[in-house]
Image (tube, rainbow, N blue to C red; front, side, top):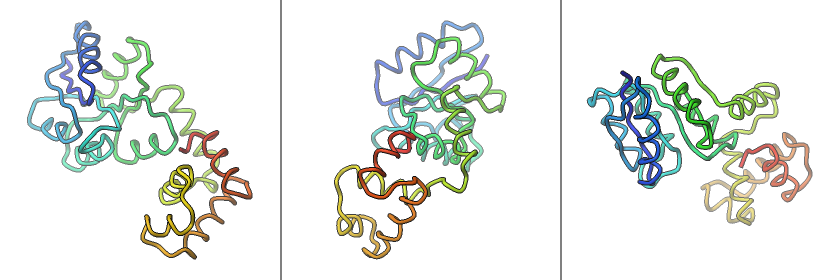
Length: 202
């Protein structure tokens, strides 16, 4: 029997996931929580797999995944609606073994839980495609800071605002923008935001 902990800030989602997973003979939901820090109790709760969302109040799923990996906790299957390249890469780099979108079929969820419990990587087709795309263009991959700047640009921030938010000089902001434009093959902010959205970077 595979023992699962559910981490999601929406009670209705947790209830639905519990119903789906408990319907399988080889899976039992034994614990749940509404934010990432709850996952840290999994190491002492006889849990085989943590099924965790990304965006939650308090500790997010990426941080929780990293903390579990650092402390030898159970493997993590990210189950979320977020499918941007930045979120996927962050989760995998944090140590998540699985990444599945919430619109996946019930059997796919079951299979992902089982595979993750076995210590094997499992990715939804959309996620695998995003990672393959990143690997195929490693020289064009944006850094975490560059994606952070793109997200700020998307909100309408100017160079001065960016410098203040990121605690860097305006000259450094301009250098980052040059690199971002080169990697995305664009010439201005609007085009950069459009290209980043198309590539699901933001």
